[in-house]
Amino acid sequence: MIGIFIKLSSTKIFIKSIFMIKKIYLPLLLLVISSCNSNNQPKETEQKKITNHIYQLKELNTTQILAFDKNKTVVLMPGGIMEEHGPYLPVFSDGYWNEKLTDTIAKSIASQDWNVVIFPTIPLGNSGANDIGGKYSFPGTYTVRFETLRSVFMDLATELGEQGFKNIFIIHSHGVPNHQRALDQAASFLMKRIMVKW
Image (cartoon, rainbow, N blue to C red):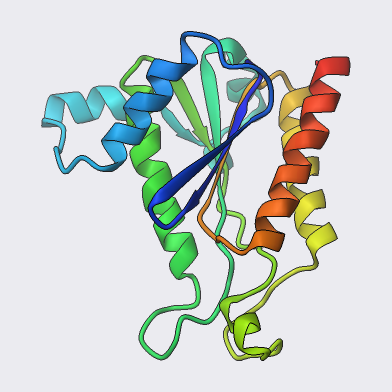
């Protein structure tokens, strides 16, 4: 398997496979999914072991990035649209949710003795919640065009792939169909590119 894109929408998990799933990934994915619903906190000694395998990409230098065993490293790319959520919630609510979910997934993967590289949160999305009411310009909603969103994820994942990373997960809970279609098209593009080049 070269990678999986995970898109989360409320309580359902949609999985778009870029390539075929090998036996090792199914148990890993099931462990990740089950830990997302778990309230169990690891003991302090376990916490130290887990976090030793989790890295923030923005804090790494080129030597550190080159040193990763790309076959045993997962890159998590959290996203989060800037959209209005009414008078009580911040406009980055999706982003905060995705960052917390990314942290939970990272700990679960790292507990299996894999390295996890967390990409900085990408605060972009297409079609805010206010579009439902036909209010395309609304305070707190800052979206990008469909083509822009698709291109951003295609370009970033391509860069990661060309550097040897084979396991790339996008964590994005914005559930608007056009937004999801942009991520699906980015995944399809990468599948074709991976089969030819990587």
